[in-house]
Length: 345
Image 1 (spheres, one colour):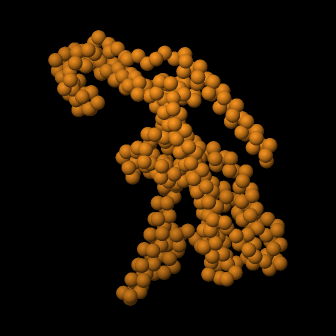
Image 2: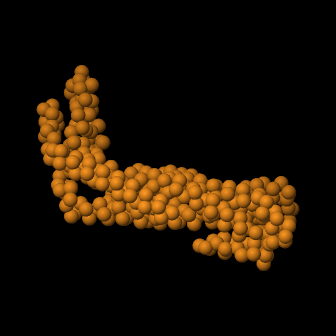
Image 3: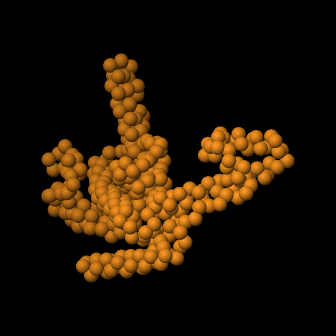
């Protein structure tokens, strides 16, 4: 274990030195930023100080005006607007680069990079721990309910409606409707929860907020846990391990020897729900304790895959939501503004 850890650390150090060297070389080779020069045909348009080219309404009015006075040059007007967009992008990139520290090793740059990297690592560790706990908890809960013989809420609702006709007495009707609505509500809540777990992060994000800035660490952690299918995917994997372990011979042998095998949460010999939601899950004297321990040991091999999935998800979340001040979004901005030395750093 220690040997593998040292191999990973040395690999990270080696790759870091290579990227650091490349960053220094590229930073020295790149010329300093120069202000973009507008094409001559754009000069008359840029002198119109009352036109806001970032406003879609102003752009539409400008295009309509040009087409009205020069109807034979509609294609040229489209080319002018496209050239105007390219010039504005170059001007924005120049201003962004000029605001950044010129020195690759400036204290401000290193401080910002260090803080963003620490924030990313903190978010990664928190999400990893939460998903590790959530995967096991949801899988154990699903396994216990399966052993209890509880059908899904939608199936329970259909069975209830099929087996119990609508009563003629008003008092019984109220209880009937209450039971049906309770099952329907649970089915809808479960369906909504599954929809959240399978939804991409940006879909969930823009359902709650329209703008994301630096105060979004909590949202980043929340979306990292609940979105992109991470939690539900590895819950299914851990549940598969539990089912496979429950079918092995030692479980049947333990059951023959009268080891506790009850799953009723209300029974003293069963598995109460509070034990399922504990951080350190222990089921002493129960056959499920051995099933759980063996499944958890097998799941350790999937942690590397889960870690890769999680890192990819966090990168996508930061870039897709344009979270300013976070590592991946700022890396995207750095590449866009052609600061390749800083990007390699």
